[in-house]
Length: 284
Image 1 (cartoon, rainbow, N blue to C red):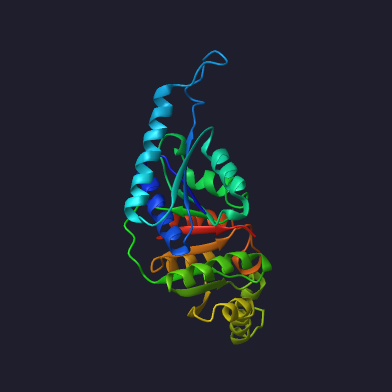
Image 2 (image 1 turned 180 degrees about the vertical axis):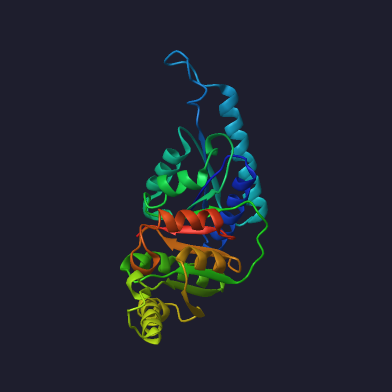
């Protein structure tokens, strides 16, 4: 099952289209979820006051339009809708947890209206990615040309493996090439004038990191063409550059080593803000 948060915004429509396409490739049902965040409406109201029928009616309209869009785009996909009262992050998290192992992904737009307003990139990455079992895909509201390539960030930690597995799965479903990007930087002490090191050995070691991490998944997906893209660069710069020719960029929710720090912090947040394609954040 693919779950997508909808709120009627342009970015939400893009998320519905992406989710419908993914559901079609998988042969999975699509669930559209709308959160009616009425906390703003009840400010100063007496406890127990009935919620505004206007707000709830608007939510039903948003779901109906999203369902029509999904069915028009992918008529073969089974679509159902769910409306809930509450803050979007909590509602979507509950929807993903309720679906449990049936949830293949939770998809949201990068910006929204009403309940999805504000810096959604922050609320999604902090409130959903890494906190639900399934991958969280953030889709921008822009025209997407197909490039036939999925990009995945690779580091030297086992925590990146779930993200790599999802990237291989997506590449196989799409018949796309998988570009495995490993960005490395020299440790600060190696930049000192008195330091001695063999740069060729460093490069060879970094390439081996990628080979070791990819071997099992390459054997399991022999139909996927893999490009090992090892760069001496900051991971954000490398991943954002690769995203310009990608249909999807996949990063882990946490990582160590070459990708540095917690990916939900500096790397994934920067990637979510600057990538040119949809971004999937996969919990480690």
